[in-house]
Amino acid sequence: MGAAMTRSRPVAAIVLAAGKGTRMKSALHKVLHPIAGRPMIEHLLASVAAVGAERIVVVVGDRREQLEPVVAAHGGTVVVQDPQLGTGHAVQQAEGALEGFEGDVLILYGDTPFVSAGTMSRMLERLADSDDPTAVVVGFRPADPAQYGRIVAADGEVIDKMVEYKDASEAERAIGLCNSGLMAVSAERLWPLLRRVGNDNAAGEYYLPDIVMLARSDGHSVVIETNPDEVAGINSRAELADVELAWQRRRRALAMADGVSLVAPETVWFSHDTEIGRDTVVEPNVVFGPAVRIAEGARIRAFSHIEGASIATRAEIGPYARLRPGTEIGEKAKVGNFVEVKKAKLGAGAKASHLTYLGDATVGEGANIGAGTITCNYDGFLKHATTIGEGAFIGSNSALVAPVAIGAGAIVGAGSVVTRDVAPDALALARGEQREKPGWAARFRATMRERKKAKG
Image (cartoon, rainbow, N blue to C red; front, side, top):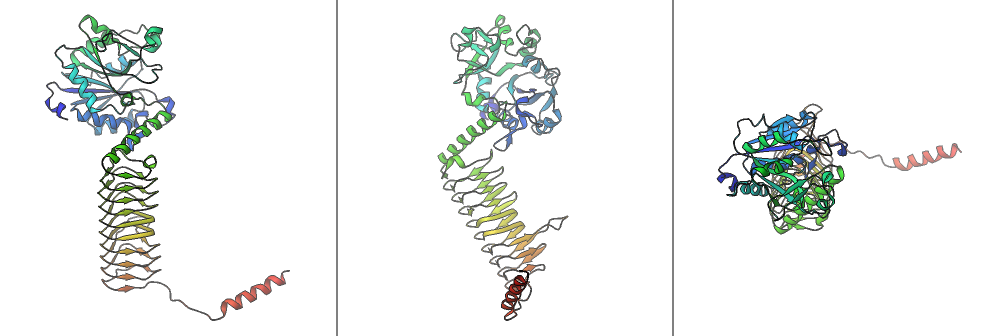
C-alpha cells in the first residue's frame, strides 16, 4: 500500500473478462467461479485496490448483468466487447470509460486472479524508471510452455520481439520465457499504439502484444518476471480445482507458520478471509467458510463445518459440529458432536455437547444444554428468539418454543416442551404425566401370540 501512497501518477486498471468460458460449461460467468469462497475476479480486484487504482474498467462479452453488481461494488465500470476481435481490440473498448484519464494503465485478466499487489507495484515502478520504457510486460517460465506466447529478450529485460505461439517459428517456440498478457502502459501512449495495431496474423485478430513491437520505433519495452503460480489462468473446472488446491496449500503453510496446529493439513479447507489464532488446534476434515474468526488456543475437532462465526479463546468445537453465520462462541464454551448453531451466542463456559440445534438464541455463561434440545425458532413465517440465562440447565430432548426465556439458574426437565417463560432458579416440567398399567405387557403378548397361532 505504501507504493500506492507515494506514486506520483494516478493508476487505472483494465481487466479483460470477455472470454466465453466455454470450457467451464457453466451458466455462471467464468470469472465469478469462486476460489476459497470468493469469486476469482474479486481476488484480483482486491489487489487492484491495494495499489490505489483510481479507475477500474472491466471488459466483458456476454453475461454483463452477472458482472455489473460485483464490479460496481469495487467502484468499477463494465464495458462490452462485441464482436470479440482479440485482446488489443478488447483493451480499446475501455478508451471511452477512461476518457480524460492521465496516468498509468494496468492491463490484467479476470481469469488470472492471483496477480499480487506487489507484482502490480513492480510493473508501475519499472514503468516510471528513468529509462522511460514504453511498456512493462510480465513474463514467466512455466515447466511446460505449451501454447503460451513467447518473449524474445536478448539481454533478459529489453524486449526484442513478442510472438503468439501460433505465429512463432520453431526456434521461438523453444524459448522458455512466456507472455502472461499482463502489461503496464501510460495512457498517453496506450491509445495511439492500439490504433496502429493490425490483424495480419493467423487468427485475424488484433493482438495486444503487438503494441510492444510498434513502440520500438519510439523507444523500448521491458519484461519483468514472476512466479508461474501467480499468473496461472483458469479456463476449465479442472484448472479451477488445481488453483484452489494450490491456494489451500499456501494458506495451510501460512497457518502453521503462524502457530496453528493442523493435524492433517491436506484435509483442512480455508476461506479467503479465515482468521485463526496461534495455538489453535484443527483436527482432520474441517471446512472454514467465509467470515470465520478464531481466537488463540481454541480446538476445532474433526469433521466440523464453520461459516460466519467467531470463536473465543480455548473454546472447543466438534467433532461433527456445524456453526452457521451469526454464531458467537464464548471463552471455554463447548459445541459438541452433531450440534448445529445459527445466529446464536454462547456465553463463556456454556456447553451444548451433543445432538442439539440452537438458532436465534442467547445462551448465558455456564449454561448446560442437554442432548436433543432444540430451539423452535421458526413459526413458518417469522423467526423468534430464545434466551437461556446464566447457569441454566436444559434437560435432554427438550423443545424450547420461541419466543421464550429461561431464567438464570433455572432447570428444564428432560423431555419438556416449553412454551412460556421460566423464572430464574425455577424447575419447569412440561410433559405428559407417566401412567403405568401392571401386567399389561404380558397380557398383550399372550393375546398376540394366540391371534398369530389362529391364523395358522
